[in-house]
Length: 359
Image (cartoon, rainbow, N blue to C red):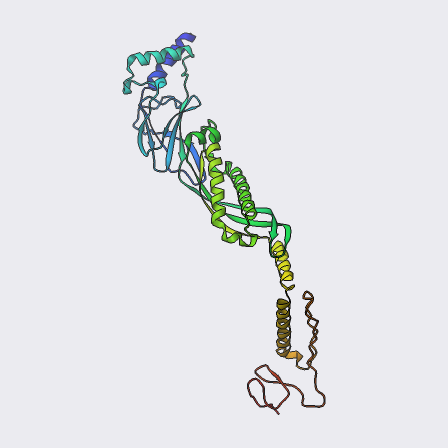
């Protein structure tokens, strides 16, 4: 009974798998990298009993623009179709009467199936890959750098913050299937590889930033070096991803790259202190501070009767002595009055605009 059942199953299965099939794949969603192709079956077809894991020799594999189709046979990529349109599949393991296989080929298939208990000893399926650019992938990275400022001689560890987006696409379907899909027959989503891609891109960005700063680019100048940063990232990641995953980095766009605010404040403070060691710069800073203090006192509505202004000192320029400024009220002469233009005067006419002193 077992042999008879195996022979019956082998005969029926072999005949059912003689029909030619047509495989296709609709447009894949944005979050999908690969998915299994489907066999077209309509209400009028007679091909309803064939094994879903057998693709008859001579079957059609249709490929849309922006897609690629792989035929996997017994765990190995047998054929790759990258050209859009109809592609004819050929395999010696699944011959068909309708592709010139002949009765001899049918007999061999029946005999082989009987030896396997009536079942087919082959496993084939079509996998479609999305070859379009996968864009809009954000990343952000904080990179510790050793900062050397030649102006001040300052050497300290600072952090550079950088963010942006990157895009990539599949360029080597066989490598992608081997290393990412791993003989999977279901859907492969972007979310499965995105964390790894983002982590590796962050590492490449850190290397690029350190290389630029080591080459003499100051951290405050990094915002003007985005082209060099993106080029370094693309060169590093394209080689690595092409070898490991069959990907190519198509674009990297950097939104912002700058020192962390607290590190920038340290650098600016050091530069300001270094600037004031120049006597001429220190004197100019002191004069500006005195002028600002005088203007602020004159424009203060509630301070018209306050004539003492605190001493303004230069604490960094040793060649400039501390200077005290006093606007003292003359109790023996005319009192001060404030003109509508803002100037403080003691005479009967404003020294700035000539307005007469009010009674």
